[in-house]
Every structure is written in structure tokens, then in C-alpha cells.
Image (cartoon, rainbow, N blue to C red; front, side, top):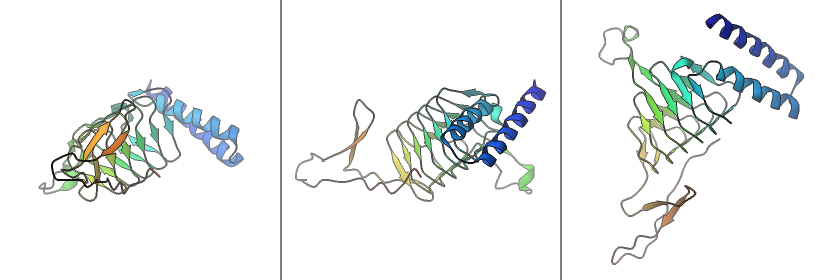
Length: 208
């Protein structure tokens, strides 16, 4: 079975090279997209429908990684799946983002001799900005936004927006995030007594 998978991957890699040599066109791009999906479908633990992989995506230990439908993974995203990675539906992962379920023991006398694996969970409708890093054991709950370049060292709450190193929430106590029936965010004015100001969320992140 493993031999068959390797042969499939080798064949698809050869086809990719031919398509790149032909150049960009609507037809070659469509064929490339279909072949990328087929390649990852044959390797991942689970792959849902309508998942888009752009070029240069690297996933180690594919057999421990599952990705649900509608997710989009941009160029040069890198995942270490040895500890397990579970990605939900309609997740956006921008270019050069890193998701790792593996790390090393900081107190070990020889770092390379120690290995810690903890599963990572990315829930539905999460947006991960470019160059963000998700560390082992993290759960990013639904509708959260991870700002560009953020390093996530602890769990992220649903509907939260985190930025920085280490990642921190940019919500204030006076700010309410309301999700409507379409799952979108709305800024709402605080109604507490004596306060008439309206507070805005400064979302300093991009998808690409």
C-alpha cells in the first residue's frame, strides 16, 4: 500500500513539473489544482471536499493530519503533523504560516534527543494570517483570527482576535463581539451607564 502511494506521489510530482514548464493558463492551473487535491487525498488521514492547496505546501506525517471541507491553504504553508493536526471547515491559512504538533524539551541535555508531541486543533472558520506560528497542543476555536506574524502559545477563544509575539487578544473589556447568523463580526457600542463612546477593533492582520 505504501509503495502504491509513493508511486502515485511520484507520478503527480512529474505531472506538476510538466505543467509548470507549460506555463500558467486557466487549463493548466485547473489541472494542477485537481492533481494537488488528489495527491493530498492519497496521503492525509482525512481530506474533505473543496479544499484548495496552493503551491509549495509541505506537510510532514500526513497520515496524522485531517482537513475538513472548504479550507484554503496558501503558498508555502508548513505543517509538522507527527503529534496530530485537525483542521476544521472553511479555514483560511495564509502563505508561510506554520502549524506544528512537535517540539523539544527545553530542559533536555540534548535537544534533538527529546521530542514532545501534542495535537493541534484548528476549529471551523478560523483565519490564520501570513507567517503566523501555531505551537503544539494549541486549540484555536471557531471564528478566531490569528494576526500576521503572531506566535500562538496558548489556546485562542472563539471569536477572538490575537496578534503579536507571544499572541495576545486585542479585545477590550468594553468591546463586545457579536456573531450574526452568517458568522460575521460586528462591533457594537457598549451600553453601560455613563459611557457614550464607541470602541472599534483594530484588526492589524492580512490573509495574504
